Each structure stands twice: as C-alpha cells, then as structure tokens.
Length: 406
Ligand code: KIV
Ligand code: ZN
Image (cartoon, rainbow, N blue to C red; front, side, top):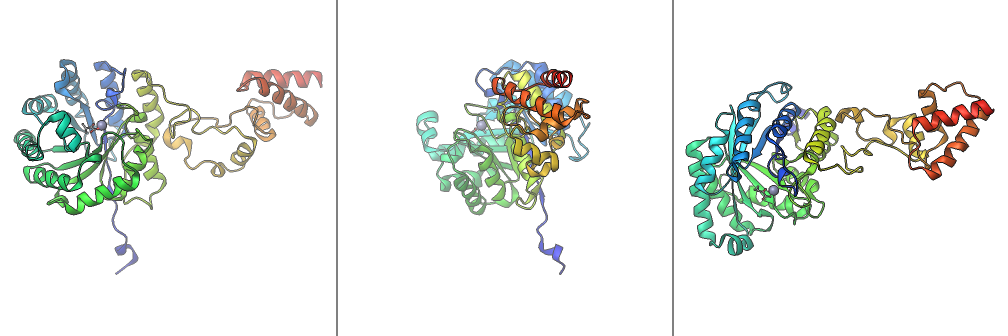
C-alpha cells in the first residue's frame, strides 16, 4: 500500500446557484427577463453546475424566463471546459402536482433539467401553515416525488425548515422520498436558525440514519439571519454534503442566502480542510458580482468578503509597508484570482511613507529629492486629516507644489 492509497479521493462539489430564484426573493428585487438571461449566461461561464432559474408557477413572467433560460442558456458550453457538461436547469415547485407539471414544462427544453420539489417538515409549519399531520406530509411528499419522476429523471427534494424539524421525522420523510425516486436531498435552514455545529451534526445524523442515503446527493441550503450561512454551509460540506445552494453576493430572502463566492473561496483557500474540489472559474467573481449588484439594485457592502470594494485594499501604514515588501503579509487570496485588478493601497490618514512614495513613483514622480518628498508627505498627512481618501490628482498637486517651492 502506498501513501496515496490512504488519502481519500476528493469528490466534486456541486455548486447550485439560486440567485434567480431565492436571490430574486430579496425584498424589492425584480429582474427583467433580459436581466435574467444575462445573469444566467454569466453563471454558465462561471462554471455553475445547477442553475435554479425560477419558480415557474409563481407568474407567467417567471415561467417564460425559466423557459427562455432552459432554451437559450441550457445548451451553452462556452467556458465550461472544467465542468465538462452544460448547466442543469432547475425549476422550483411546491409539493403540488400543478406546480410540478408547470416546473417541468418550463425546464423541459434544456439538455439537462431538474425539478426541485419542497414541502415543509417542521411541526410549526405543519400545524400552522399547512395544517396537515406528519403522516399526511410523508404521503404528500412521496406522491409528488413519484409524480415528478414520471416526468423527469432528476428530482431534488427539500424538507422546508429542516433546520427546525425533528431529526427522526426528517429521516422518515427522506427515506420515503429516496425510495420514491428523489436523487438529491437538500437540507434547508430556511430561517437561518442553526449554529455551524448543529447544522453539521444534523447533516451527519441524516446521512447516517436515512435509508438509502448512499444513493442520494446531500445538499446544503442556508440563510443568513444570524450571519452564519457560510459557516453552516461549510459545516455541511465537512459532514458529507456534496451540493451547496448559494447566490451571488448572498442576496436572498430577509438577510439573504449563503454567498457563493465565500463558500468557493473557502474551499479554494483550504484544500486540505474540505474533502471536495470545485470547478468554478473564480476569476469571474468580481465581474458577476458587479453585474448582479447593478441589475438587482442590491449594492454590495464595501467590506463584504471577496467582492466588497475594500476586500483587497490596505490603508494602514504598517499593512501597506508589509504588502509592498511581500503581498502575502496581509493577503490570503491574490486579488487577480477573483478578478479584482486593483492597486490595493488606499491612501488615507493611516497610510505610511512607503506607500506614499510607491504611489508617487507609479505616477511618474520617482526622482524626487528627499527634502521635497518629506514636505510632500507632511502636506499629504494634513490633507488626509481633512479628507477620507487622498486621490491621485491630490497627490500630483501636492508633489508639484513641493517640488516648485523646494
Ligand atoms: O429556504 C428554503 O427553505 C427554500 C426552499 C424552497 C428550498 O428556499
Ligand atoms: Zn431559501
């Protein structure tokens, strides 16, 4: 036996994007059909494996957007060399025959298609929202998954509010839907309630105790109400999930869904920690993030991980000095890896002489005498005290002034 025989082979992580479905459920966001096609094309080039294009029964507009995506984007292969196949186009459906038929009609022209059926399983949803018993819930789930399978080979089932459902009841429902033909089992923490330890052990428990579990792909779907969506998703992956449901920039209901760029870059940065690899073209992240922000009207906060405008900027003198000597002193990801082309030194009141001199050199002032440089640096600090960011034109004015008066 060799050493490599002992290292478990990594499995591929399936990235399921729901920007156009759960993401569009962000309050105030409505994307036009053309916006959706544009985003879907970019997600295809990004290397997304499954695209949830919408909730076809919700409105005629949603139906036709999903249908257009299935026909126009579903077959595309451009930029998908690492993935090796087109995107699977999924349509969401409640566990109701009419929804399932409508979802199928919307996705059926895609070369690869999926129906995603959901039904709540927590007692609070069963008693107060659906007003059905646990027995009725199992029967409805089985009937609908079977109906879905009569139309389409690829069925995903989600027990809505799984994060607050009784784990033993979840095992019962999930065993029954596997038997009925569901191939992917998604575990939604619908209200963002779980902690990472809870969500991870919930996944591990379900995978261990559900009958036929080994035949299914297990999936995470987390919401960010307590700011834990990314941590919970990664805990799911560490405990056996092989599909993650995510959105670009983490947009979605209330506080949003898990952000794709965060999960993928965690797996990218810690290859030894997670038992999976991804096939996402990370260099497109900055561009796709900007496109989704522009089209959805949901601005990205400046300090957002990976895609925020400050994510790769350094302001303090100590950090700038370190980065000028070796970027790895303060950067764990190279900005180019996520498509950020930046001069990453932000000149403000915390900046140091080294960053100041380096920026002046980039602007062509690399032969300035040290006394003039000192005068210019002092003028820069005085201005930085009054102004949040000192721009390149400010710098040119300062140095020109110092050189002419020195
Ligand atoms: O959060 C949720 O439970 C959902 C399901 C429809 C999968 O979005
Ligand atoms: Zn959701």
